[in-house]
Image 1: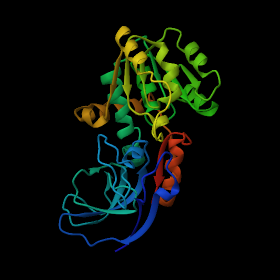
Image 2: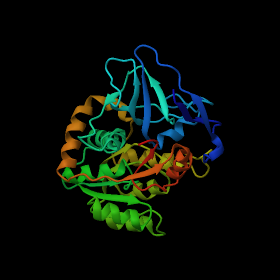
Image 3: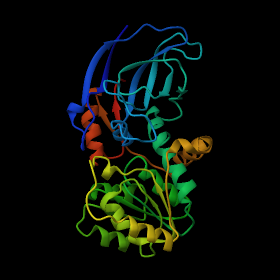
Image 4: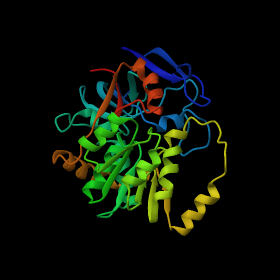
Amino acid sequence: MPTNTRIVLASRPQGRPSPTDFRIETVEVPALNDGEVLLETLFLSLDPYMRGRMSDAKSYAKPVEIDAVMEGGTVARVAGTRNARFSIGDIVLAHSGWQSFAVSDGAGLRKLDPSAAPVSTALGVLGMPGFTAYSGLLTIGKPKTGETVVVAAASGAVGSVVGQIARIKGARAVGIAGGPEKCAYVRDELGFDAAVDHRSPDFAAQLEAACPNGIDVYFENVGGHVWDAVFPLLNEFARVPVCGLIAQYNEIEHSGTDRLPTMMRAVLTRSLTIRGFIQREFLDQRAAFYRDMAGWISEGKVHYREDIVDGLENAPGAFIGLLEGKNFGKLLVRVAT
């Protein structure tokens, strides 16, 4: 049997994760029992939610235990099987984490058709990030023709899809991204109506100019100073799906003025809807998502970009960079070919 290279959580970070919070191990792959399959990881998805799994603070999901394999979605190839439902060579969507091999009982695996789409898209535009954008925007945001939809982290895996769906639904899409290159991509390649650089010293003024009629839907991925610029521009009855707060994930504690009373007053007087969500609560929409997204991609209405890092050993550094906005597109680690 082959040996398994895996990355485990060595310690819980205080603030920004560091390479020492991870540990690379090499272990023997166990023999398969009846009903099991051996998965060889091809692609590992790196996503912001993983920062929360490194913490033992109360959350919607259990944390990764110390010395346990880091959690993550994967695309894998069946390298061995004692399960009649799977054959050697099958490509599957799995959740086998940061390791080169994993043993599975087959539960939760979904076979992928490499001829239908690049298998990596099952971790991006046709996977959890794409579905997060689809379900959160359409169920909570409910964009209408002529409205203004603003999305943060607009060049990323979720934000890029949010803006493109908004355009498909007849809304005006304004993207917020970090740096001129990402803004140009959002505007020129993804077709957003406007893109604003949150690193600009006059970011708030630029955002206001890009939204002359205010903001009807704000898809929140970031928090921090981006939220500070968005909040005054929210119209009456604006909807805010809260998907992530990547600017705040590394905070140890918050200090400063308590602005909650001011925000709550605005929620009341402007009749705002602010709702956090986790994509799994909308699983009944999966079939519609696969149908719609595959159609939009084939029609050229949705475009995507992948940022692929080679080598499992580079996952910790790539993940730390993700939390700092260094990726450009859906971040993946190519573990094997």
